[in-house]
Image 1 (tube, rainbow, N blue to C red):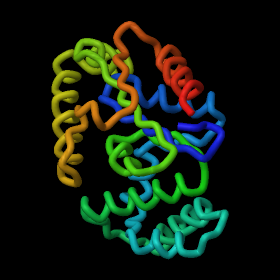
Image 2: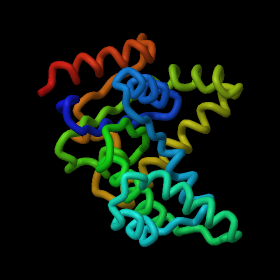
Image 3: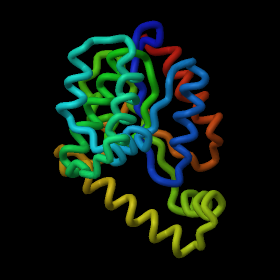
Image 4: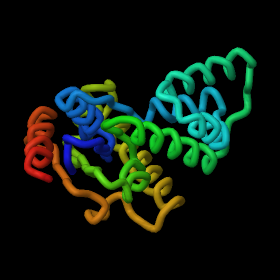
Length: 206
């Protein structure tokens, strides 16, 4: 990946690993936008956007594409549109939004399907952030006030759900190391340590 040209970095992560924070801090250090998948998914769920509507905006080739998308969302909200897209339609819509953002600017994207969406992108870096179960449980207990049992149940449910989600749209497992350029275990590391490791890789890679 060449950071002097337009690039995309995907942060794929296990729940409770701190990957979202790593992605945000990495984007800040690189001076680029950070897009959490929750932001994109929130748009599609709340406003019922379709892939066709994204294509209409994409075809306009305007610099203010993101702003116009947000305005479209406001319009849909004011019209009391209630219907929500299916899971497949939502995946396709999210993919088109993320691809468009990457087409316009360098950015860091955190989300479980980032590596899949951008696997053929010419100047990209795919990172997977993971941690031991105990590390993840401790983090959930601290950050979200969960009991040990509740945190463990949440991890099992989310891990299974994310793996199932990915396999619905590909023949890959999110735990396959071939999906990524960098894999980091957060045990014994801070988020800043992880950012430093990724930045060292980025600065060396040309």
